Length: 293
Image 1: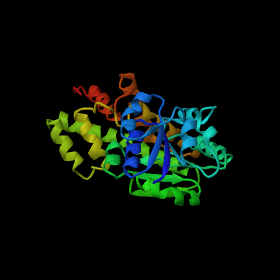
Image 2: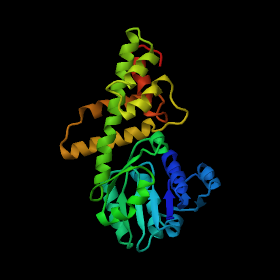
Image 3: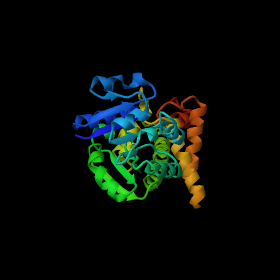
Image 4: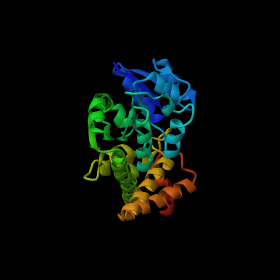
C-alpha cells in the first residue's frame, strides 16, 4: 500500500483516485470545490484543505488540473504543493499543459530534494473505468522505474518517452487527432444522412468500419445525443489544439487539419457549447448543412 496524494478531483482525477483506492492505496486528496470530492471521502479518501497539506501527507503526489495557469496556481504560494514537498517525495503531474511550463516546475521541485515527472494519459472516462488507460511519462528514468507500478494500477500501458516535457509533447501530438478525427466522422455522418440514410444507421456502420478507431467507437455515438456530463469539453479540447498549434509554429511543422478543426471548436464556443463534449462539433456542421442536430 502506497501513501498517495491527489490534487484535482475532476471527472478523470476523481475516478483515478477511486481506482487507486481500489488497489489498496491510501489517498489524501484536495479539490478547489470540496463538494465535488464528497463521494470520494465517503469511499475512504482523506481530505486535505490545501495542495500543501496533500504534499505534506503523501509520499507521492498526483496532480491533474485543467491548464498551465491552474498548475502554477496549485503549485505556488504558501498553500501550494511546492511548499509541502521534502526530500524523497515525487510529483506525478497528469495535467496536459505547456511542456515549457512543466519543465520549469520540475526544476523547482528538484530544489526541494523531490522529483517530478509529467505523465499525461491517453483515454477517456470510459477507458479509465475499463482499465485500458495508457500513460506516457517524461522525466528521470530512475524515477519512472520507481513509480511505474503505481501508474500500472491506472492502466496497462505505461511508457517512458524521455526527459521532462516530452510526454506532454507526445500527448499534445496525439490529442490533435481527436478533434480532427471527430470532425471527419461528423462530415461522413451528415453526408450519409442527407443522402437518405438514417443517422443511427450511419453511426452504427461507420463506428464498426475501418475508420472505427477506439475514439470514434466511444465518441461517435454522441452525435445521436451528447452526454449529460462532458467527457472532454470543447473548451478543454481547444486548449490542447492551441498548444499543438503553438508547438507547430515553434518547430516549423505545418498543422493544417489541426487549424481547421480548431476553427470549428471556436464556432462551437460561439454557439454556447463550450462546456459540452467536443463531439458537439457535429452541431456546428449540422447547422451549416441545414440538418437538425
